[in-house]
Length: 187
Image (cartoon, rainbow, N blue to C red; front, top):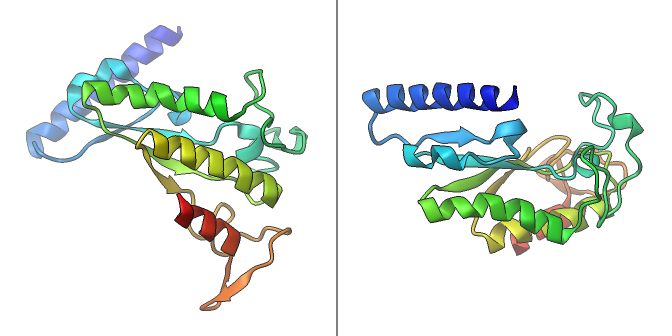
């Protein structure tokens, strides 16, 4: 069943890219990864479209106690390295690197890659979040994969995140997480 769904997805993407190219031949097109942006599609490398991954592994760190994630309130308190993930073994820097290597392998086929979303919800302990995010961002940077923090302002952000364990600075009426900003600027 999984292969059938994957093939259907590929056909839909191929049809969509063809339709876009007919209207706008030079438009940049970005294909989202499979499984919520976790798995690349090397079989679509011939389309001349970029691909987008996510920076949320392990989910037990990035989505700890996130109210929209069913069962996230049962995740153990995050640690890094470590961190609960529904698919088995704990995560560490080596596992992050291996995950990002599969995306970087697309460069061999001249496919651009970026990490369209990354970060952690505000219930993840700040020290764990910062240590983990440093490893995520360094891993991406070493592979020349750019990223976008989800979000700039809000529960994943550098501003107004409402984390309970952060000493904020006032920045033009917003609450600035200086440690997160410094981390983002350092990589």
